Image (cartoon, rainbow, N blue to C red; front, side, top):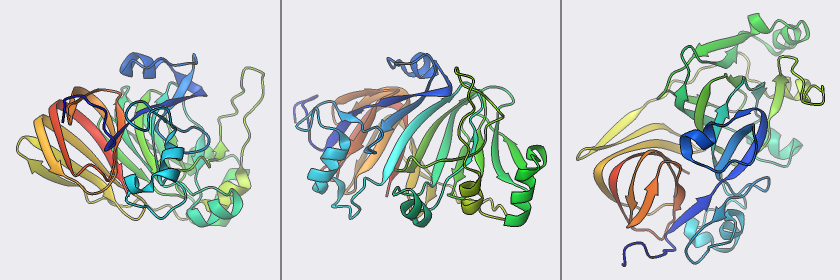
Length: 315
């Protein structure tokens, strides 16, 4: 192999950016992206969702969007049986508090929204001192949940949790949650864009309008009482490099790869990879903080060189 030659076993991707009322400029300042909005809240880094599909930037599939590549070249993805690409990787810049929200499971999402449900997880890339998320609620039953919402008892209902850089949070469908101001996260999730907004602090947009809420649907899908699932985090050492597995279930496996000098592995399954720090090479191709790519099922051997950290997800 000639170093740097285009290859079909790795798909390098161009992100899609989304304007959000709570967004900011950190996707530019932290990752060097050319962001299109003053309040850019989301980078859809690896996406085949119809609301924002990533573009392949080099190799034989250059110029095609990931949804098209997935539909036509399923061998690259282990002939995954779903007609929908299963995962979506985002980076979120919470320059302000996100709305309090909840996501449905697959059964509800497909029936009501014709979209997958959304179980997701967050790796905290950075957080200001004292940063908080909302994670869970205090209601013991649907009836109590509904009553507390109707009474506007948000202070009593919502559970606040402090977070810091390097934290990992697993957010199953049905979990009431919100990312707080000053947090930069990488989100690994099911490929879904279904969100039910429960509470938005009575904010208004530039036109003085409040954003739509989805109270009844939120109550429908929220798990009561709230359960915080215990994660069994595992690490594996490869010389100086370390792979940390945060979560592994029916929806996804999410890992952090900390590579020191080099790492060589055999693989037989497609993986979504995002560089969150450092720089180096994969199979001769230069990668750096902010690079996103898919190691396809065609890549039997992968060789990293350099000092870098990545978030990896796969089904």
